[in-house]
Image (cartoon, rainbow, N blue to C red; front, side, top):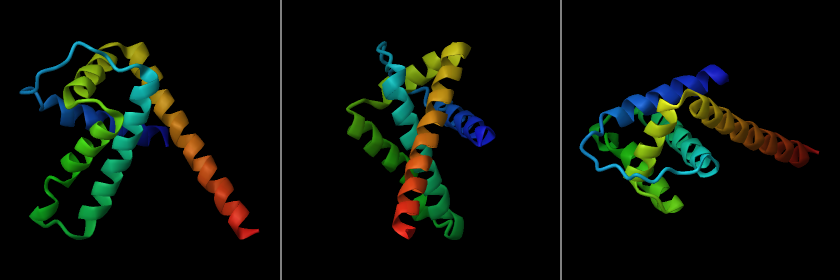
Length: 123
């Protein structure tokens, strides 16, 4: 499970490193907000992978970017805020590790909540 998050985190980095045309904000998102944004983006990536797994038509080409924009709007942040914050955390290995560990903890909590809910429904 941990390897999955590392792979996805590296994928996010690679995706965002190509966005050099954006103007980056100096404001850094706090880790407590950043972890939820990253978690939602991981879920969006999973949605996009499942969506395009059976149909690789061009109509899905920018679907992940559209979903990312929705995530940014839901948290009241801009792409620039997110990208500059991500680069900041990535350039500070201890903080980046804390961010990834926080995202993993959010994942575990959500998984446990789903498991508890499904157990209650089967009883």
